[in-house]
Image (cartoon, rainbow, N blue to C red; front, side, top):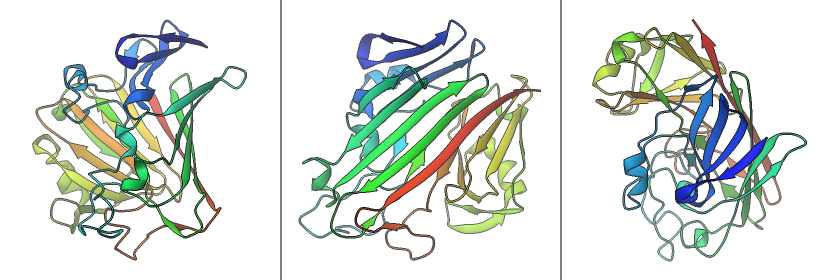
Length: 280
């Protein structure tokens, strides 16, 4: 594994010329590119990335301590700022290290004065990233170093390149899913038919969700076993991309008792997810 520093805070972690990832620790630890067998798997809007006044569109942003938004303002009290969409982790500088022996990239975020303006907890977030032929793996550990219970949510937000929406077919999904645009339970098949017009849906998966791209001749599979088995599908036309995201909890999990997650003092939460690429 070779680590090469580039412009704009981006590093290349290279296995060989045909297989590498780019990541940017100073911009939320985001993976900006994954090249697998010379093919670029991820969508990434580089022009938007260079404009720091705009949110990033593309790559694999990290979502913490919430996914989506919170309906309730001043959740932790008037002395704290409101958490923004998807939390603060994707906007902060991360530490990183490389374990060459195990071929693992470690991304680390630790609570600090800035995070405590939004989130009154001491925590450590560690993400181990590894990749091999046709597979990108994530192992996540969230630690509560506070003396009180700590509510958490966590997600990854991968953007995938596609050839065209007309070439996309989703496979292996439940009959119904939650339409997050109006918070209703609807037919998954009917919503997927509308993906070219923009969708935002939540799937309670069995740990695997896939789509085929007949234009690029490949299948993308998200493997996210319990308790990380919520899968969000989002499209934003005319951008030629689809997001297929593993989440721990639904939106508003801090206020909604359904499937919310609180870590006890000194408790840890372990999560795993992988992205598999297959040729059709």
